[in-house]
Length: 295
Image: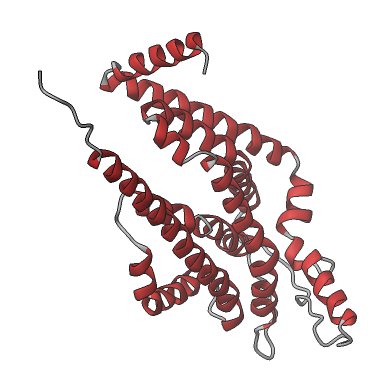
C-alpha cells in the first residue's frame, strides 16, 4: 500500500476509534436507513408489477408448466421411465375471505421480495459498519464474506422455491377427502410460500455461522463429528418445523441441511488447522533467542 494511502487509512481508523457511543449509534442509523431505502426501492418495484409478481412468481409453483415439473418430466423421459416420474399439482382456486386481503398480501409479498432483493446491499452496509473496527488480519480472515453470505442465502431461497415448494404444494393440494374441494385462502398460500423460501435462505448460512464459532473457539471439528447423530435429530426437527407435515418435504429439506452440516465440519476443521499452524509459527518464532555477549 502506498505511504499516502496508508496514512489516510490510519487517519480514518483513528477517527473511528475516537468516536463516542452516540457517534456509533448515529453511524449505525445511517447504514440502517440506507438498507431500508434499498428494501423500499425493490419493494415498490415489485408492488408496481403486481401481475408479474403474482401470476409468474407467487403462483408459479401451482401451475403445471413450472420449470421444476417440466425438468423432472423431461428427465423421466430421458432415462426411459416415461411418465412415471412426471407430476404436477392438481388444479385449485385461491379465495379471499376479507375485503382487503389481496392488498395486504400484495404489500406483504412486496416487502419480503424487497428484503430478498436488497439482501446483498444490506450485508454490504453491515460490513461497512463493522469493517473499520477490525484489524488487518481479521479483515483478511473474512474477505469475501459478503459475497459468500449472499450466494448461500440466494441458493437457499432458490432451493426452497424450486424444490421444496413444488413438492409440498403438490402434496398438500392433492391431499383431500371425498366430497371436499381444495380452495385455500390467498393468505394461507402466501404464508406457505414464505415458509418454503425465507427460512431456507437463513438455514443455508450454517457454514458461515460455523466458521465464526470456530474462529472464537466455541466449536471444533471433533465436537461436530462426535454429536453428528444428535445433529441429525435436530435437523429432522428443523425440517419438520419449516415444512408441511409430509415426509417428502421434510426429506427434501433434511438432505441439504445434513450436507450443510458436513460442509460446516470441513470449514471448522480448516479454521483449526490454520489456527494451529499460526500458533506453531508464533511458538517457533518466540523460541528463537539471539545470543549476545555482555560488555
